[in-house]
Image 1: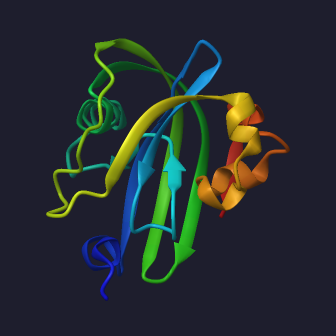
Image 2: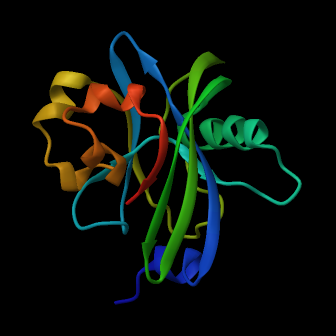
Length: 156
């Protein structure tokens, strides 16, 4: 069986903007299918389109994936992920909710949707999850809440 994520995003470099959004000590995460086996959760974000600023990308991606409008705050860190056929460079920012209503969104590029769920998840719940079910950046911190303190460049 072919993987639609590999087919659509594979064999090219993707530059992505991602947002860390914390409300009431809970981090907003999106559950995707076809990226790993089982559940795989990552902060909202996506590919920057030609001519689009990072801020415009984050605002668009949050609206598409979560139904929320956000404002960009601080640049936090960058990651690079290389696992053929996927290669991504990601810029992570702290964002704040500026409006909208939380809902399961969609990925307009994908014919078959890969977004399963969107939730604000408490740090204590995240701490109990298998690290393999979370974006690779969580393996760079001793506990999930420490992600907000990361600065620099990380190879995943």
